[in-house]
Length: 370
Image 1: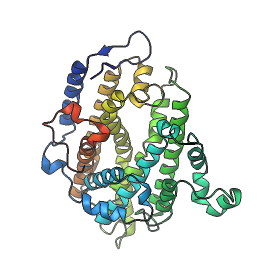
Image 2: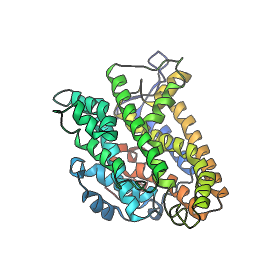
Image 3: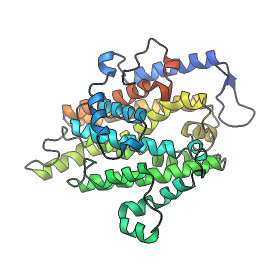
Image 4: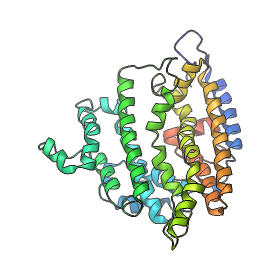
């Protein structure tokens, strides 16, 4: 393994550590983090139950042939494990949405764009025109009569947002609106990250709020969390029982207050579990990588910034579980606990993407979906 730079900036205070020493330090951090997050490293708790069935159902949908099989399967595993107690139908919709979102991120990476014959020019245009095609397809045709459809993955996301391929349309317009807003922010963030990477943008010390601002846009966290906390098993009748007002009050008074905590958790846990892979593969660590940007602004090492983020994630889980307990619903409590367990397990399981087996070792259970 090559030496790895873990400094906070490009100055002389960078520290290059040997591969073995780096892995030992990182492994110790991850083991403590997993313990503090109450993660259960057992086959029973980290396995997947319906991946094959969800995969078959997702593959039967309209345009998923444009998605890589590995992405589809990984996102089926995600839906299976983070929303374990939800209905099968909702798991399929969650997996489908997640797979399309992940592939949009993959396609809009600078490396992928540069490999395209037009250097990604058409994809960039698709991003610019996505909202027009979504909200007013006829206007899109009028303005661009010869252009044709967007890339299949964008067209598939539009189909999800416009139809009952998402679980909120047409019965839950408020949740549906939230999902649309989250996707629009996400696509804008993908564009920003691409622009900043191509221009060698670097965050500066007088931009302390910029990393979190960009990260919250790019994580699609509100959309992902929406699938978890609005599951029909949490409130009888999917917030449509005989007493609709009571269901609504329960959701917005007892469940919705944990949204900010879980919103942050989604991005933070992903950043924590992606840290090793991004350092190893020398992905952008100056302009859009959250941990590296925070490290530079605070003038600390990336490992110290990772430590801070791990502490925040532990506190977020504690807060989320306290809110869930206050709801008085055991269903809410076990759903939220499973979300944290499942999200971490999923990152460990997708070895080819996150490579955490190189850190945690062969004795660590890595799931069984690939």
